[in-house]
Amino acid sequence: MTTITLDTVEERATGWTHMLKLDITDTTAAATTKAVVLVPGLVAGDIVRDAAFYLKSGFVGAAVTNLTMQVGWNGASVDDPDGLIEAVELATAGTEILAGDATGVAFATKRTGFAPQEAAAIEALFTSTGANLSVCTAGEVWVYLNISRLPSIG
Image 1: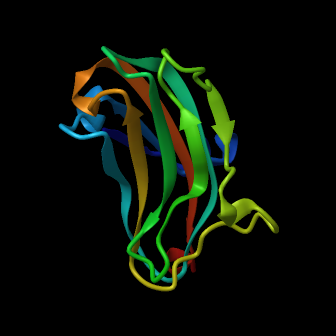
Image 2 (image 1 turned 90 degrees about the vertical axis):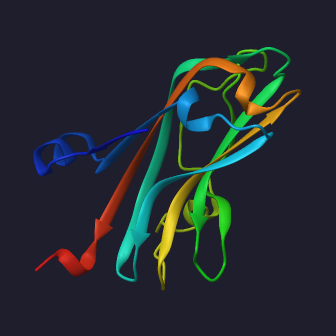
């Protein structure tokens, strides 16, 4: 995974603080699911204010009929694997979704985002149907996050 933390000029221009590029080397597993930690070490006072994804290239693999990605949090008192981005199709064998924004429960009513009250991590959960993730031969997805770290301001 390539993690790019945007500087303040890029953040002002784009609205994003983090860009994470994931490909098959990050998602491979001898299983049909794999969780990938995107941002570890969130603490009380951090707020994930927005999330989005861009499917750079659809995921391809023999016998993989569907491959979905969810983005959420783990380590909080109530984990939610799709709290930021609900399941989206990434496989070319399915009807892949090329881009989307925050659809999870954290943005459902007031669009306030996710503010952990204890240590937590942002994770992407990949789930394949038809075969293990290890059979994928191509695919890349970019995840964008806007994270405010309130304790570091001031």
